Length: 116
Length: 328
Image (cartoon, rainbow over all chains, first blue to last red; front, side, top):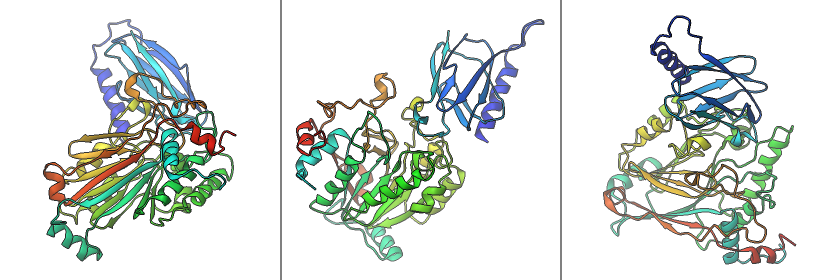
């Protein structure tokens, strides 16, 4: 429920952002694949203020995709594609972790989002 | 056991390398003893008036773990049992705060690890042992195996004037307690006056200690809001494999060390990985610590309870390890 609310908030934030001028491209899509116990790629670079869609997939079990600082909280279920809209507001390096326990190596399943 | 380590040296070794746990002493706060309101409540409802006692917290034994951060397997856990058994005044309770076992998907192996945990824990003289699961015990199967072996993942009980609450923030797979358990907690606490001392034990911290290291409980605030009206709340947890203590609001939050390996301090900006096992000087960064939660301020005095906390840890103890033959 909470995750759905957060996704809705992101959607609302995206909708509330300045409307792209005619001819502007749709938000860039960044594909991220999760599998025990890594994300691929394990680092992506985004631009501050640029709306993107993180397209998440799992190759095995349900994983989480969580960053308190980026206010991202989503499940990645196998067999489904999960889109997470994101417009980074501040430059920096952010760690995203899997927060759904997925086995003995879960504790180190993480990736980095660099915002320039 | 051949060439057994004496208690003092073992305290040094086990605490130094891997942590032994924490000994808590619960004492009447004043010569006048417990307040009449608390005494009457516990005596009438449980037939047990408040009294002094101690209990031990042990955490993160990770039975079944194999790897370079700890080549000793369950040795620390086994020695911790000896340490507790050797205490001059036996504690009334031993609390285990999760990750009793290390997760595995090898068929039958996780159950075998739980059995091995029970075998080691059964060596405790103290038979009043209470447990909560960690994510390694209950995260993948939503606590099915844990419940079949150990029973409920959340529950409460009274002991000599202290109300203990076991909370499960792991078995839903993610770091949450969940609204049903929060509602249960609210109802569970409803019979107590605000001065009743409450000890919550759980696996993960109930606050944002280090979210990037998954050291948090997402709805921990919901739990703490239920506990907020109470004057004397102590939260014991594990998960972080290092000692930590802090006061947030009026509640004390205390983490016990692991019995398998230690994590560094995330505030140092270092990567999250176990502190390397150094055969020549494996315990250099740990020291003997004694922490006291004293009866100061109004809360503890009002709540009739003083908690005195002694945590055993150690300094360099490699010679004693060698003496014990572990590196022979």
